Structures are given as structure tokens and as C-alpha cells.
Length: 272
Image (tube, rainbow, N blue to C red; front, side, top):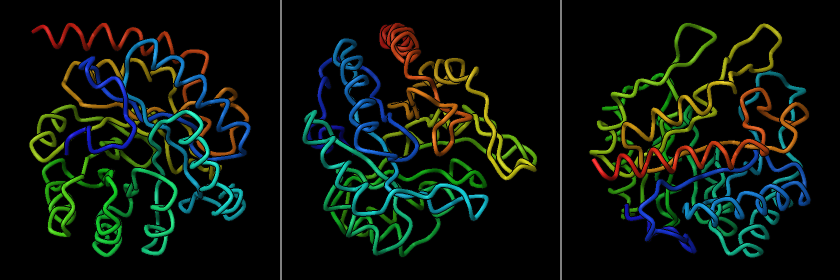
């Protein structure tokens, strides 16, 4: 995939990593626009190609009383408004074949969740929309196995596939990132590191996922050093009260400093 395949993406001439960032879930129009405006300002200053991320619904929850969304069509319309307001591309995750066609009318990139990336029908449905497809590597999968997920997209007549590593299960309640997988997956296509989900601590006894946000910059730095094409970072102006995955999100106030440091590392890598 060429990054030029992503509609309305900017700053490609800067030869920076690109960024997928936003809240875990769309909670309201006001929150989505507020986060997008801040991230657009930061990424324009640093010349980072930017894609706004937000889930229109959360299908994979530990408990039945967990937040799942504000309504599919309402959230998708908010994603479309974000894209139109700031002239930026948007990405959301899908969970069913029907979601693929529905979401493709509102966003530029369809994301296949890590737990579902082996579901052939879902991957093919996303590919057949003609949209860019972001394939999350399953926490249970090797980097090498992602070539088969990419091939499903290609064999469906779509050459716009990218891979996102979101960590690998380490025991029952922790995740690790095996950075050897970055150059491996780059052989198969554009590769992204999902920093914040890689720092989740799932399967907690409370039924609410934990996280290590204090390690976000550490993992992101290592990703840039090992050559990832892009970074995925969930961010919120009030993570403690976010309705989903607040425990591993980056506070929006810290984003500019983190990205400034990462751009400096990227420039060093480019000059090696």
C-alpha cells in the first residue's frame, strides 16, 4: 500500500511516520471534534500525516454492562463530520460483514480487530468495499502469519492493506511487543505499531482492562527506532473518565511532547 492511497492525508513530503490517533470510542460529537482539533494542530505543526481514529461501537467487552457506543449511525455520522470539518482521513473498526458496507460510507479506512483478523469473510467484506484495510495482528498470532491476512485482501482485488501490531499475549494478564516482528511484517506491507493497546493489561479480575500509560513513549520510541511506518495512539482529554480503555490511553496534554520527541528520533533514523 502507498500512503497516497489514503484520501486527504497530508504532509507526506516530510518523510515522517504517520499517525492514527483519537479516542477509543466515539462518546459524543463535542468530544470527537475537540480531540481531532487538538491533534490536527499538533500534527500540522510537526508535519505528521494524520488519520483520526474512533470506534463507532465496541463489540468486544469483558462485561455486559460495559459501554458499547452511542448508536451506530450517530457515531458514524460524527466520524464523517470530523473528516469533513478538518479535511482529514478517518478510521474505524468493524466487527461484522454488514459493518463493512455500512461504515465504508462514512470513513476512509476499515480496521479489522485483532481478535477477528482470521475471519476470512470479514476481511474479504472489508476488502471488497475498496477502502484501505487496516489488519490488526492477533495477540495470538506470529508476525509471519500476517502475510496470509494481507493476501486475503489482495486476492479480493484490493491492494490497499496495512498491518498493525498491537502486542502479543504474555501470560494471562499482560502484553509485550516483539520488535523483531516489525521488519518481518514490513515485508508484507505498510506496518503500524499500536502503542496504547500494546500496553493493555487484559483479563483483570474486575472485568475492566488495565494498562501502563507510563510506558507509551518508551514503546513508541522503540517502534520508530525499529522502522515502523506509522503509530497508533489512543488519546483523550480525560482518560480517567473515558468510557472505554481509559487505563491505557495517553492524556491529550502529553501528546505534543511525545510526538516532538518521536519526530526527532525519526529524523535520526532517516539519516542513518
